[in-house]
Image (cartoon, rainbow, N blue to C red; front, top):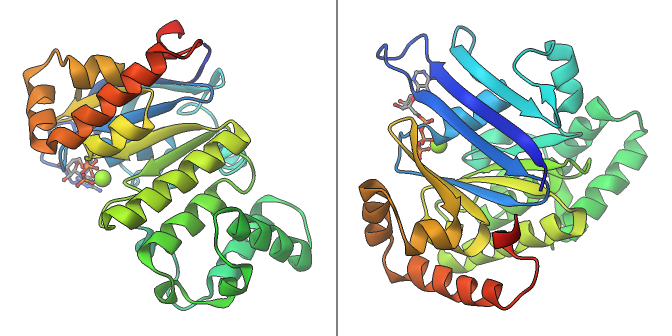
Length: 279
Ligand SMILES: Nc1ncnc2c1ncn2[C@@H]1O[C@H](COP(=O)(O)OP(=O)(O)OP(=O)(O)O)[C@@H](O)[C@H]1O
Ligand SMILES: [Mg+2]
């Protein structure tokens, strides 16, 4: 299994931080087509890691280590080159969907603009693409003319997933895509993510504090605590047999759901050829 994203010894210090590293010596990889869960409690450095990969941290932030995507050095390449990769090859669904949408413009017009920044096409063609992308995630294309606040939380998340994947990237980084949603809506968003992923053979780096989500969606997990990775492994290895006391505490706090889901998946995987074990 080839690595699509290879993060090695990533360390991040904010200019306005407390002097300590928000992310310290983090190494992880995401293989083609797989889902890697990055999990840990609030403030442990999940978003910082995700944004460091895409070089979306504030100016003046010190970032060291290496980030390679499809063999290319993301941290070292000129910004211009990186801009060409974003959306086309790797895309982000940022934390808190509402904040990433402009409240005074319709969803459709924002999406049309994004497409036209990245692809040479007419407004009409871009609109057609947006409508198809919305339909793909179960949103009536006519709803494109709504403003973000007229969408429910789940619709906003699904719309952002549709947009982030509209140019068929190879990797999607989704930062807490289900946080704050009730369980039924959360499930719809996860199913949408899964469908889009299967349809396009997408790899996903899924950032979440929710081990239940990880147990359900991910092939492997990286557990982060205070900016450092404490444990990486397959879902069944980590959730059913945690090696680190911190992981065990997260699992205990998540309750039975995460464990039962991981057990069910372990049983299902064991009976399917070509499973995570072969990777
Ligand atoms: N722009 C910034 N300037 C200074 N410190 C920051 C900045 N962004 C994040 N931090 C700090 O870095 C640490 C990691 O924050 P980060 O947002 O990555 O955590 P997180 O794991 O995503 O948390 P959450 O689950 O709440 O989203 C925290 O201590 C946070 O206060
Ligand atoms: Mg975060």
